[in-house]
Image (cartoon, rainbow, N blue to C red):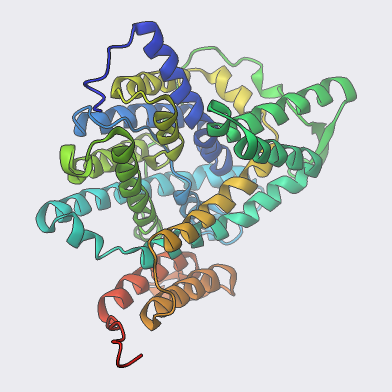
Length: 450
């Protein structure tokens, strides 16, 4: 049944349904700025406006929400990391790691903006060659290892954040696992939000009643586990710290390949929503239109200083749970996100969440990213006994992980030392696409041959 043919909902019910969608995306969406240094305010505005942009291009037919993408976090880190990132040579004495990250982030958002153009290019390809022929360029044997690489590369960050207060990190992880495994209805859909909220409440009580503290490496002092020092002077409403992008060819090359993972995710979510609603969104409004909407949303986000956007499986789950297919409900959730984005005080409260809680939730999230890649290989029935498939996966995994975690490799290009090891995912994806195109397909053995 189409969202347009369902019984009309009252404004109150639509508002409540919109809140459900906002809560479903909220936990994962705010994690991206908390982990990368981007602004929570700008992120909420970016995903809210980005979702409305998507609905415009999709002719208000697809009940999808665009949240902040985890895939691009690896690319952001490869650019901003003070200890080995693309611009680590600019990290000077007297500068804190946070200051370095803030100075370099515009290059990452510039890469995000340009990566949105890849969606437009692929949308054109879909229009010209058709969906089936287009997908032959990006089969699961190429996209799945890309997703696995992203999850594995993010794993060290979860450990580093969790170790700042391991008990609260473990508590967060336990809440997430319990909610996602034994939860029913809405609880099962928002385990990350419940993990963040439950652990934060306990950390807040522990700080106020028992004086829990945490050691701050930057200042070499002990601070309250939940610290509201930054709340002084923060207003309820105020303009977000928008950030203009800056462009560097190497930063762009680092960032673009991550769009391949989100494009594959986009296609999967369009198919999933179609099966839930009983419609074929790949045909109407068409995959080319939804790809354009997703790409323009990411370009807008990069332009104002936000993360890349992607269709959210959490919100697909809400649609499946509520059986409410009306896209206007998702649009209301987007408007809620934009309103919250204009509250500096709200960002301060979010920023007071201890790193250990973020790390605990990331245990599940990052592992799930890698697990989704493995699941894609299984569900696509990729035959790993075939030499072609085995070669593609093997070369991509060793290239991506070997370059990322091995010794730094520099090539001099135009008088500039380019850290090739920071482009491991990009190189792995390129090799995967090339190998898939040139390696011959193995013929199925006949009965006589068997």
